[in-house]
Amino acid sequence: MEAGSPLEDALQSIDRGVLVPEFALHENTPSGTRYRRVSRDDRDQRDEWEKHVYSNESLIIEINGLPLDEALPEGTGRGRWTSSSTMPGLIARMIEAFDLSESTRVLEIGTGSGYNPAVLSHLIGSVHLTSIDVSPRLVSRATARLKSLGYAPTTAAFDGHKGYPESAPYDRIIGTTAFPFVPAAWLGQVNDGGIILTNLAGMAGGAMLKLHTGPDGAEGRFLDDWAGFIPARHEAQPEQAEIDDEEEGDTHTSFLGAEVFDDQKSAFLAQLVLGTSRVARILREDGSALLLIEDRDGSRAEVDTESDGEGFTCSQVGPRRLWSDLEDSYRWWVEQGRPSWSSFGVTVTPDEQYVWHGSPTSGRRWRLAPTV
Image (cartoon, rainbow, N blue to C red; front, side):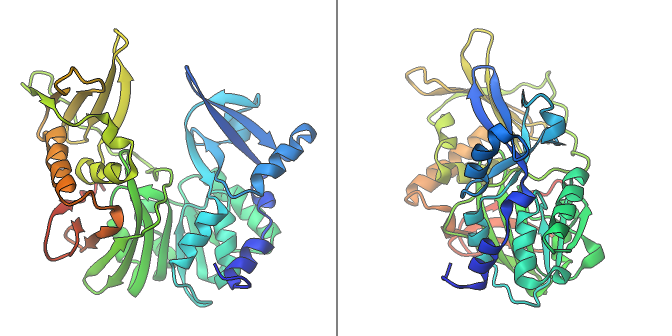
């Protein structure tokens, strides 16, 4: 970011504290994640609030789909955070990759606290910005706080998977939530020559993707700098297929264990293979750990997290052998020198979308399977 640039001016001019009057800090405990609400209005917490809200860090603003005053009425509690105010440094990196001008029409997916909409409004003017979020409460509060700062973009409570056709077409779409595929609705809402910037990610891993749109779809590469966002939510979640408990599966000893998810590069590869699958580490009754992977098509893999000396015991059932597919791609990845996400790209057409390595016309591909 250049000194004295419009972006630097925007970041210095906007008071993040107005948009984030409270947030939650978290700590991991043996019984799960514990949250503690920190508020500007609590005199005893004012110094702590200022320290975090004016630092380059992401701040939790919603838990279990509820604003913090409802999620943590007693000041502390447990749950799963569902929205955060993005760290200013990441906002700057994304906007620098976005090629904005004062007349650029932008759709932002993920209003959140309103901080990113404030920066964008400062740069392009509120009239050119539409910002949506699946959470009506977040949209309502962010809209009021943006207005107090003099910004009035179009805002709406809307499922980001659908884009926002009411204000289309756009020159840019920016997603500040994570999607395991590029929502098909976006293609029809961006002008040719436009840009889509989003976090293509799922429960395994992901990276930031920059697509250039054209008459036949969109194509582009993953950015060099890694970033991650909270998964986007649907208004209604797609149903999980039933797993046939009578179906005979298979068991084998795998050379690959749960550590594949511990490195950002190999986790990115795992995401290409696993797509919309759910990934969880659970404990058996005997205290041993198990990696459980379930896909919406009914495929399931269970992998021991501890080696028996020969490898990791893996059991699989369903229409796909999820872990075997990952083993195959992992072997290829090692043979290629363990390439980073920036050597991969994505092609999106009205009929299909896939990730490719090296070139969109040759080399290995992984299909991205939309669920809506």
